[in-house]
Image (tube, rainbow over all chains, first blue to last red; front, side, top):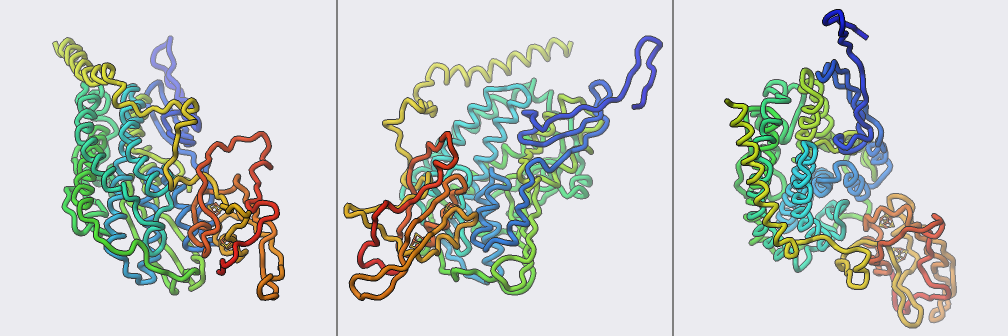
Length: 373
Length: 158
Ligand code: SF4
Ligand code: SF4
């Protein structure tokens, strides 16, 4: 290790420490190898693979219906959106016409998933910077969405509600009422999020001006989702390549230009408002009709390559399928948002303090199973 | 100077935040979502679609609806279901017919994806609501879903 002598009494020395894989701020089993000089970070090396389950390889063995449930286990906080991505790819390849009802329900459930994911993120973000209260408030509101999901899909986290061709079963009769209750409830609670954390000077001082990512770097690192939008890079897949019912709703893409930790925080808060408004626009007029179109029991995609991307709560998820015409894909690749967003951590954390690294990582909103797959 | 104004602002915004928490402190009973599990076991009711485990309902005469078509076994992504089948003589027609001997369900491997229930042509299996599955021996999670001595319900064809 390199040693520099500050004066005759003190020596300053670079050394390495491990942050994780069991560190609470890594939100999962991620190991960061930090090279530090005192408090200053010189290098961050993420060490991946602790929960690699070879999901992509398993997909090559599974049928297309079975692949859907594996995606629940990638980014488990946006499981419905992941399911939707695979289903959309299969439907695109088969050129299936999907009923309007399915499209609208998928979008509503997708946006609810986004809100619930951001609620959880907000809770742990506060906790990472030392405000334990936010954790309980975030989870309180998330609980209502979990109840909606449990009643309609049957599960709280790993839904597997989408199937190629539609939805596994129709929405529960209570669904509309519960969602409306949630909208009314959350509209009064979201301002509290601001009072509790956003407006807090201590929180602002800890987050403003640290972990700055410029627009150019966001693009060249392949960042997506709130991380890229906080740097002024407009990249919302829902705006540029609308899927399901997103073409008939109006919403503003949350954009900030500062690119620091606080900007990423604000983008997510803004996104919760936008998602609420999307759900509100759709919930009153869910079209009648089928909840599922019949597909063959064994789905065989035509020969060729198919790609579909969606916007999960963390950014752009791409599903790339190469099919040789058999019942499972020849190769399936997931382009996960977490992996690209993690890749820029070293770039924005170097030169900062260890305490700032925790705040910066919290706003990258990493979900480790999404990175490792 | 900014040192003191920082302290002042810090305390002020902390107090603003504490107004919210204070409000809930005084009215906490109303909005509480915490459940007193396991003390509320008697009253705890899961949603009717809740996926706890796969069960096979039987009627009073110990009859189930499973024809042994093995579609669920094929649909299952992880080999949770094993159907051990046999051929029996159909009492009405006198012909040989497939019937299940044992419907083996390895709960410890089930990912609760619901594909088996979705694919079953005769609705022979459905979701049970039990979720308390801690056992001392893993083998206790391997179950035979059809009751001993049970028969196929008459009239059920796939
Ligand atoms: S729920 Fe899924 S994993 Fe469980 S037995 Fe059925 S098909 Fe298999
Ligand atoms: S449970 Fe249903 S799908 Fe499975 S073997 Fe019996 S009838 Fe067939």
